Length: 88
Image (cartoon, rainbow, N blue to C red; front, top):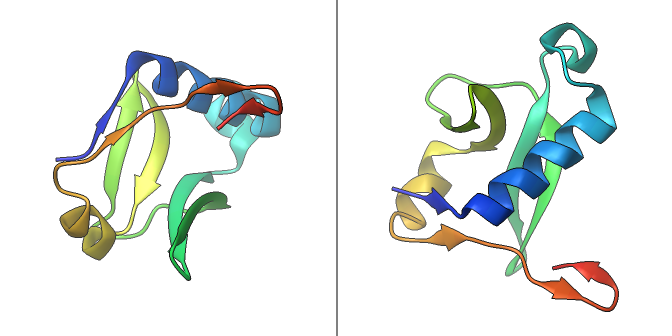
């Protein structure tokens, strides 16, 4: 199971609200998705798909993970660190 630290959950929630608004209507059904490409990870906006691993914080969907990627990352904890360039 993928875990998200409290700090990471708060940041993901803030990003989602900043990009799409706090309400489900404001986000148009899209949620942040963890993506993996060429050895690095990133985030994009996407619609939920059947089988997605959905991570929630305080009842809000904050992150989608493809089922194959979720299986690969089964024992991973997502966290953010503050850097001079911002969260990383």
